[in-house]
Image (cartoon, rainbow, N blue to C red; front, top):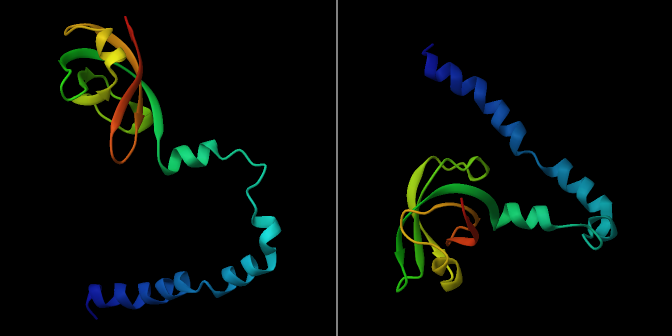
Amino acid sequence: MRTSNLIILLAAPLALAACDSGQEMESMDEMGTDEMSMEGHDMSAMEESAGTRTASAVGTVTAIDAEAGTLTVDHEPVAELGWPQMVMAFDASEEVRGDVVVGDKVEFTVEATDESNTITALTKQ
């Protein structure tokens, strides 16, 4: 028997077992809606992981584009976001952009979403 056929024969039962969610659904039905209520629970961590993530970073300002509303920074790796060292443009308010000039070394807070990356706070080093 070929190795690929053997792997398929061994993997198929495991895949079928993983697909059996009937038991899981029954236990969710037994819980009722009162136990599933999120009222009174701190949801900030869940909301952050689902949409907006916030992290601190350090870098050097390489460009300021007032028209586009961006600040370009050559930043060090950002472990919280899984970003390597790179140069990237961030959305930044006029107030944030006005605090720096090209060449400034900065520490900043970034809010990262699927749609944009925005510097929300910035200090010169």
